[in-house]
Length: 369
Ligand code: GLY
Image (cartoon, rainbow, N blue to C red; front, side, top):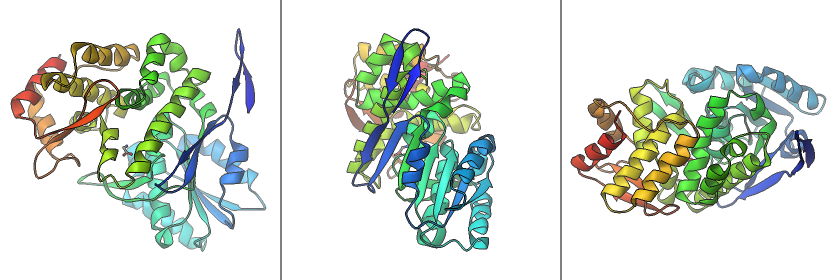
């Protein structure tokens, strides 16, 4: 626990510990600093640890190396930013470092960075000697509430994203909110789209908090922000606890992602993920209205909440064929039929299987610009 002094008030920020059960057994710890938590999370018996990190995290990586000096030999592996990290060559580089250092099954991997780094580092840990302990140290909002939680690890191939990977639960996830305070504002807001997604699919108090005070809700220094991150993690923990290997309920976490992934593809991954799923959620809301599952107010709420975060709500008309083609390759598709996670009212999800093209096209018209 640490006390932070604000300009006009003093607030107490508790460290929150959210258990993930039935999907591995581990805690997601949300707080500030978290050095002592890392001491606790370092697997007993680890003599060596590979710390995989983004270039921008080099200073923190060095601090971790020094903290464990004389006890655990921390080897660092700097990997490229974003999706460039999720390549077989980069995984091979990490395996090479471990091989050269004679890593054993009791040694550990730490992943310090955004979602791409924790996906890669988790994959390296899952595959080395068929699995060594992994501790995720996410440094982005998206990483904290989504990528690092739930045990999905993987890399991309030239044919697509996340095509190679493993479900492998981490030993712990430590989300140090202090690291977010230096992130560009637009990255925080885009990552927050995943928090809001958890509001739409399950915990509507998240939406209320954003509408009540969007600045507090999205300020990493604010206790409101800490509470909302914790709420989103609880939603994810509950869902993955029910369906670790995504044979059913876990797909609700992909709300807004069917069109969102297609937009990312159409934009050659230049859009932030959160921006793409923002448009994807508005599209899903429009589709839900067309099939009678969501009323006008429910759709308007999407625009109000996502718009208050400054996230995009529209997408250029005229790109439907590209988007439709990309959606057909979505992992949720079954036997060539598209599947959408829709809302059956705010906070309640349902699945729409194989909607007719004209419905999709009409919903697309509603988000057109
Ligand atoms: N990002 C969706 C999931 O973890 O299932």
